[in-house]
Image (cartoon, rainbow over all chains, first blue to last red; front, side, top):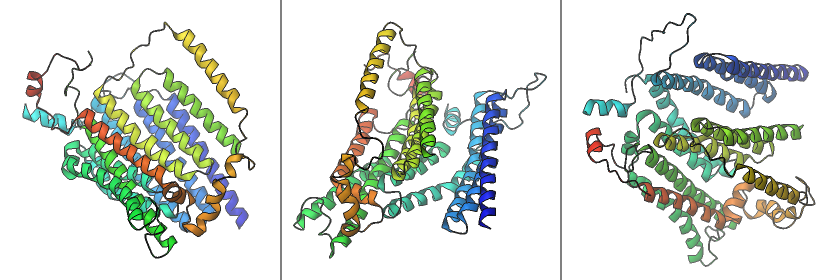
Length: 124
Length: 146
Length: 192
């Protein structure tokens, strides 16, 4: 039983590492900033999830497992939010996604400006 | 502030946990890694996140500049006060052994109060520095570099 | 095995430092500074100094990056081009100084050597007597707050002074001015 857990944890951690490397490679080779963000999100979901699974096999049913689970929940909340905030910043800066035939993408919901600029625009 | 709904909801959900974690790190410095400095920085990071999403003026309403200035001083005075209390009770400056009935109990109380002082000062210093930097605009005061 | 991890982390830190010195876009430089702090925190964890790693990650990779980005929002985001006049002599001087420093470290005791002098005078007493005298499980906190409490008082005063300095230089908070007020009040003089 111990041997099985040991092997499973090692396989999970190595698989998580492999997905991290794939994500990093994708970040370097992708042509556009939005596709690079998508490749980076691979690290945050599969990479961290598999490494957490491997560490959970090693930890057993202890307090360490509960702390690891809370770290995983926290990362699952904050990583997509960070990507979302980054995309908002890129779109409000004016950059548009590249398309194959060169047409501009039509983004339906234009992101609002920051509250200070909106207030100043209202005052003036 | 209409379009930032994902950021607003997630940060409203996460900021109480960040502040709670800062308090956890503060008081568990005796048993694990932690202590005043780390707790103060994490506490200020919660407010910095709030300021990034809801605006610096909202943070100024929640934490007025007078409050952070008073807290800056209170932390340092608390630390020095523990030292002076040791002197008033007959021992050297910053001697914790005399603060309670047993030396070990005195050390516990002394370290608790001292770390609290450090945490308060560090948190209010970080909030002050961030709000001072972020509250300025590019054309406040000097001419921008052409 | 631990040596491999530490050496690779230090190698990444060196690469990050070189890229900080060579890049011109200041936003990228700030991000690399945060990355440098994070790698340093990882190196501290591998060396079993978890308190220091905690502080380094929180301050260096967290708040410090945000403060620098706030500063960049007030100034330009491209570094001014450096004049190449004294580059060669500066490089030679830096290499000579670095070589002298490395030669000086050859005489130091090796990392983690139990016979090193620093492990025999005061550190021994703190480690052995901390359980009896103070009774806290975390020796780092007992050394920081009790045995060396005076130094920590000085550190707290330093942080307090830094905040006072920022308040004194950048002034009190004011509400963001309206754009027409700012245009009429625009003074042509520049602060030295």
